[in-house]
Length: 224
Ligand SMILES: C[S@@+](CC[C@H](N)C(=O)[O-])C[C@H]1O[C@@H](n2cnc3c(N)ncnc32)[C@H](O)[C@@H]1O
Image (cartoon, rainbow, N blue to C red; front, top):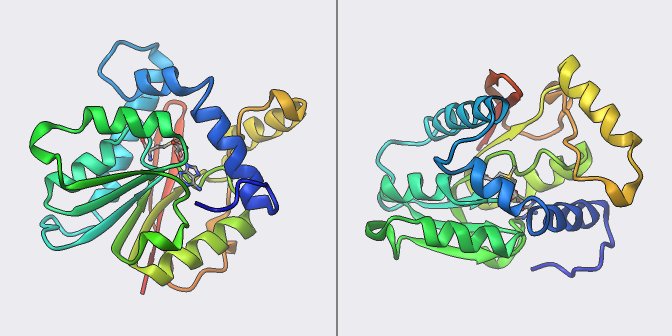
């Protein structure tokens, strides 16, 4: 794991995101990603996220036996479980140890041993190389330069990186402006909407957008 002192803007964002998901948001996130009843608004987010996960997984071969895949920012582990169910050897990493604990506890018995759970930074070079990286909604808080640098690092270690960004829609831009009004100490991490056409990453292409109620997310990929 990288040095915890926030010496760069990437580190500062990562620390804020870790504090949020490992603190106030753990329970909300645990519930949102379960089958427990949620508000209608959160239900649209849940449905949108299920659709996005399927879209992302559709970018990888159905049969993943023999493939090493990184679930980068695994949260409560739905992506890691789906990858393992297709036969992949999965490394599931998240900066929130609490979410990693939930992901580990939720992994179906039959998939135990196929997923190596880690608490830490997805860019840790010690994780090694991969056939593919899946980063669902985990890079949405980073500035464009930090996102570009992260993708460059990840794509140097993996044949394919499938990830999401928040697109620059009027709704998401409005939320971003509102988020910036709060004093820094009170802020949950704010998504930074991106114009993917302006991103400087070789091999980048657009996969598609999922828009369901309050869930709006764009799937992109970097392929060698
Ligand atoms: C919105 S959640 C999505 C979780 C999961 N991918 C999913 O779709 O259910 C974003 C996750 O990314 C994680 N995250 C953000 N930056 C990270 C980093 N640099 N390394 C590892 N995890 C990170 C957060 O802790 C959080 O659990």
